[in-house]
Length: 221
Ligand SMILES: C[S@@+](CC[C@H](N)C(=O)[O-])C[C@H]1O[C@@H](n2cnc3c(N)ncnc32)[C@H](O)[C@@H]1O
Image 1 (cartoon, rainbow, N blue to C red):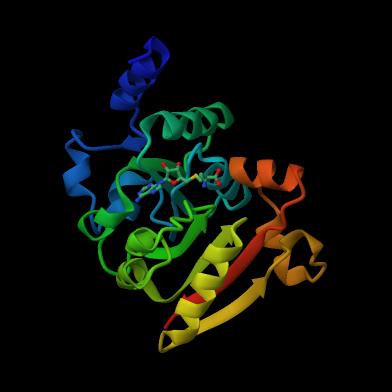
Image 2: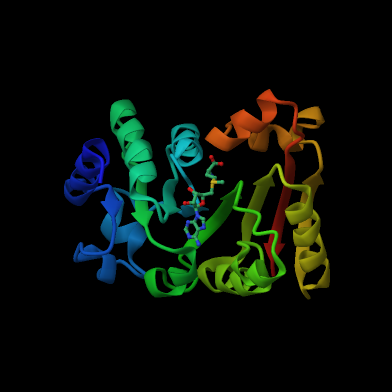
């Protein structure tokens, strides 16, 4: 393993804002994130597949009265988010290294107020449909962990994944789509300002080459 990557993994092991397998807290925080991990028991927002954590950190900066957690399987990426949060001095943000598939083991029912899914891997092959982070399997998991009526947001560059997601939401009983756009940055309505306010690493790359960003905000009631 390259030395820099190894050093980052070593850093992660000692950083209190990073929870990962091997740390005792990894087994203990389910149902108690807000009270036992964060300084204040504010409502908790989770970003699934946070990569380098720009979005989680950006949200935490914008909303000091809320708590934010970025989840990703890649330790080196969350190291960056954690480093940035420390530079800014944020105390309402943390990171968890885990697979989204294991969410139900790490969070209690109704523990989350909001979920952001930002530029998920599109998984275009039919045999990978179940691995899409907006497949019925994942929506079921999110519903368990959200407060009743909790908000979900998807941002993506990928047309196929976006249309797939809208079809799944339309077919799902009790789902309410609050906002939807196939070109987020062409929107001038104030209801899109929050989703336009922060960009992820991938979002910046796609925008710089003119790819329209798709966005949907919904509730699984
Ligand atoms: C295309 S990147 C997007 C990263 C970031 N959200 C952004 O927009 O810059 C997808 C991220 O999701 C993570 N990821 C993919 N599948 C995952 C899973 N099943 N559980 C947790 N993280 C996952 C990857 O490690 C990667 O960092």
